[in-house]
Length: 81
Image 1 (cartoon, rainbow, N blue to C red):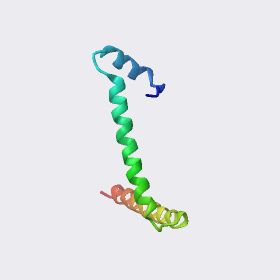
Image 2: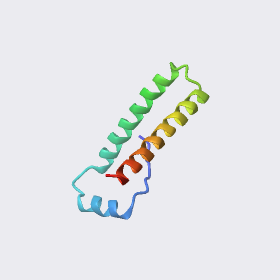
Image 3: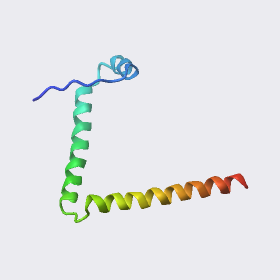
Image 4: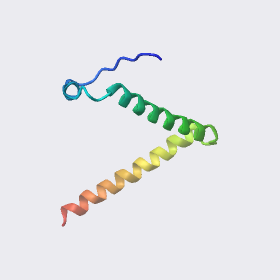
């Protein structure tokens, strides 16, 4: 098994040190496996996709415009309530 070193915030380190009865490496290992499995699923889905990077950027821009529009409409509506 390969070892890995992680940098964590001091606040988290303090909490971890207060609970030495917990196998923190096991918790980290499980979290890493969970994330890796999600990436594998995503890679599998993407490998079957016909969507190009250009298509994805266009969709992203449309979504951003709609979110911005909705946010601006909500701000205006909230001013007059």
